[in-house]
Image 1: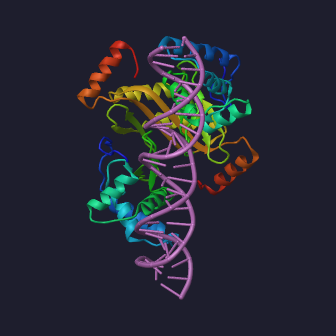
Image 2 (image 1 turned 90 degrees about the vertical axis):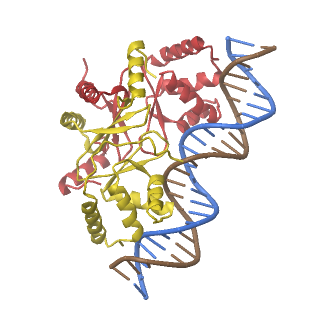
Image 3 (image 1 turned 135 degrees about the vertical axis):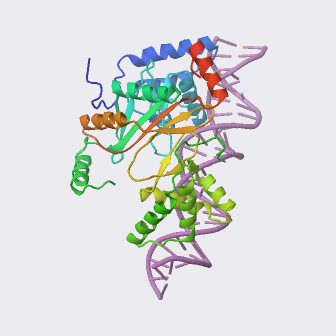
Length: 173
Length: 173
DNA sequence: GTCGGTGCAAAACGTTTGCACCTCG
DNA sequence: CGAGGTGCAAACGTTTTGCACCGAC
């Protein structure tokens, strides 16, 4: 078992994209919804990416591949993927949403650097336990959760420098 | 347009509006920023409220008190309060932001009912410990966090009914 | 008196929608 | 062939901004 709460700049895509695409195809067939070129291209971009993509990022990635989809279609398709459980939507307080492949039912949470914008993920088993306990204690049926820790990362020299500054002055930005 | 009718907070009404106002006055004086009527009125509305207010809610509350502030001023003042550490901004995925008085440095987290919109708060000491541990392990300096659990509450009969349904079918919305 | 705040309207922003046309199945 | 998807532009709702005027200190 690997140490899951270390910085993994993202999930390994490995052969995942192909598998996810098969899942998508199946979900669409099951619902008798068409598997269009645009849906394939947009899903491909998301499934192959190791980052959290905005709708704009997806459109740009398509352009770079020589493909194209109107932004309405990008939004509609991303919403569809979320609805099918193949993607998750995140709001990192940037004024827009980001999307990420959702592999299986596994939840993971985010450390967001307010300096450089890097987002890293972690997964701590105790967190699941604690939140389940809180929900139970409040008669609450949890469906999904969002755990975001904002702060300063130690990935770049600039961020480490900032950490040193904050620590010595005891201040926070 | 924001629909404020559904959001209820379980945070106990504190008689600390006056105290918070004093803190605000002090912070402004320290920064040599003027303590205007609008700032006072907007802060008063927020400090006296036990709910999570949208900018629109604040404007409406002002109107009800016979006061007035342009929406630009409302937004600017709420941003100021956040910057001064006297308020926090929340995004409950409604398409707009909500604001809440921030008392001291205490963090608290939210259970959000996706059915009725009720927002309740919780504070679990273990959560602090777990998140601090995760941050430390990742060389991350945490400044603030957001923990949101979305699901179904048991406050109303309708929500309880829904819980029963989901439990028996094993499905999630 | 001076610097910043305020109000209004207009702009900006990400996102959604209406509608004619196209495509998958 | 028909249900549904797509593209474009226009609409949307929230938030921000430009600018002339006003008010706190």
